[in-house]
Length: 409
Image (cartoon, rainbow, N blue to C red; front, side, top):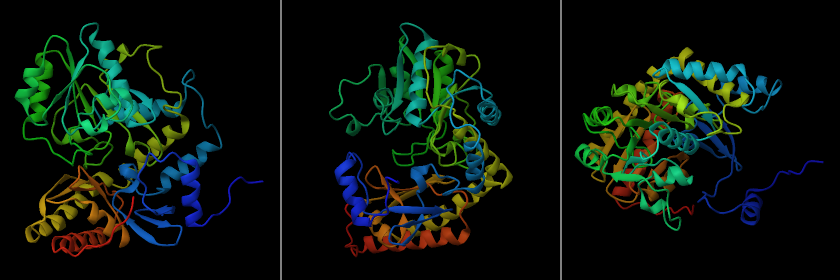
């Protein structure tokens, strides 16, 4: 006898109220199916999704090559611990290494876990007395205690003190501030090359290059958190390749496995062995399902030419949205690289998100005023036009004081 039954939308809401901890602000929508860049709710309404899976679904919902690879793997081997070798994990590590800086991989399940691994590796490699890591205001590195301590946003720290010591917060883009924070206990600099949750903030010209130079001068590790920007999001395999600055350690997750849970830390081969046996682990990290999904995602991107497609789609979005900015004073700035796009408003973005939801468009607002789009690289031009048309109309109406819709999240 099945323990599940088909419930009405209201009954599902009731199930959550009774049994699920309410630590998320949820929109009053039950999603039941997704295909490409479209999803449908329990009432049959269709939505165009410009923020699929919180950025995890870079290949769209249920990409066929990933689904096929996972289905086949499920019949052979679902999970074994990392006390054994599996072929797929080895191929996955090789594929990521060859497309980045030829490092070695540690696999986990999420971006926060990958960043925890980077923090541990930093301390182990640099040795006693060197434990401080310089991080940046507006950055976001996760919600576990180490990655949370590295997140220089006080709103995420409320009620959780004391945090892990050793993190020094600097203004993003201020190279001189970084220089002044370096002392004999400093071990690393950790940064999102493009800030995501912080508002899709791009680095000033020369900033990342300057960090690389400071790291080299003071024997620091340079860590790039590419949880959001990596895996093809910017039109390059990794965002750092847009800036020609190579990190010592890089963290990945979100789009890594085509929509399934998966995370990774890559480290230069001279550094990686410091994460010696017994010092760190992840029970499900690099499991056969995640590994074949990650490999299928890489193969899909390459066989379908999706890196170039991401650049073309990004340009199409930026063209349409910058045209909006020219005629609509409520838009302060439009910025982005590839399919990582931010539309900064001079007012709260929540009404725009709510009204877009009502009209069948899923987007996100971050940092209060930034409409954040992380679209799939499998979109058609017509879907870009449809999404931009809805978003632009809503923002224009907002600017004219015409939005009244409220959706309780």
